[in-house]
Image (cartoon, rainbow, N blue to C red; front, side):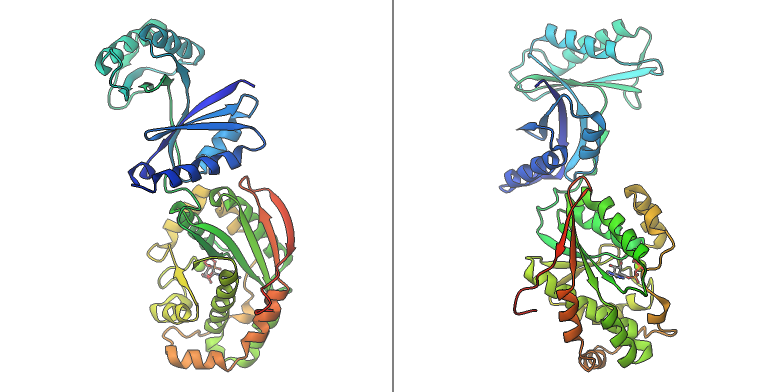
Length: 406
Ligand code: ATP
Ligand code: MG
């Protein structure tokens, strides 16, 4: 089948030394995953990936794939031709003639000669192509700073011509930095935390504590929608849904009232550490931000950190709510996050939560609550929903904790 060609620009990856090959391979695979079942092949050349996709793959599908894949800095549909100046001019002309140039008033040509043996210098090629633009659309002025149209030509093993390029999400390919477990609530912050860490290459699964019937089925549906929405950025993800009502009721019955939130957060860290430990994950990610709520003071976060068996990453720690909200809007999670279904019932929230806990005293208090059995039971009742790189649900099954945890 005939193929459409896309030129994909890499950014930070091209600066990687000996590891560059593995970053690039991951990037190519991450893109291909999103294009399935359509067939695609790719070739890599200095700072670029040339992606050939089945012609019947819808443009929107390709656009969605490239705009949600970390590691992509920019991309454009391109034309490839022989490195002959006359052929290049003819192909550029044909490309421009197919375009709607009605609103275009200014242009610029950008010629790049990676193959230095190509006999025509970049400047001369630029002039020749500017003439082509003038023939197709007489009267356009050259604007080097802010043109309406840019005609690019890159001379490599072949010549590549393209007119507009779109910005990609940048970052590093998801999966290149190891694996982590995101604590995903129905709120605004945690989906943004997922985006930020996936952007640095972390492969994430999500874990949600569900306290049915204190938190409703709608709250669970909301979290599933959030997992689906962020799945393309995470290149697919799994959502562990942990029924934790009994654990929370035990905390409410036995913990000091002002310490209940901290005790809940300590048990979240312990349970998440157990899941991460058996799933080859090296960190826990949360959407906490310094001083946002009582459990996010320095003292509170140092205590919860001390209850996790592995690194806890809080990518939003220095952001204020407005900054987080604008990111949530950009990645498309905000509208779901603000749906009214509470993910944490007021009955579990103390009126005057401790903001400056004594770590040793809190740890001792936690030990007295006997949370292990609740954690073990919750793990044995945990369900896993999986989502592919296009955000489609692909299955649901029971989590089987390793026998030493069951
Ligand atoms: P968000 O912070 O996502 O907007 P929130 O403000 O309701 O939600 P906080 O009370 O600020 O949540 O909790 C801080 C972090 O703890 C969340 O960002 C999330 O990582 C984690 N978290 C809170 N509740 C849950 C839950 N029910 N299941 C999983 N993780 C949770
Ligand atoms: Mg929050």
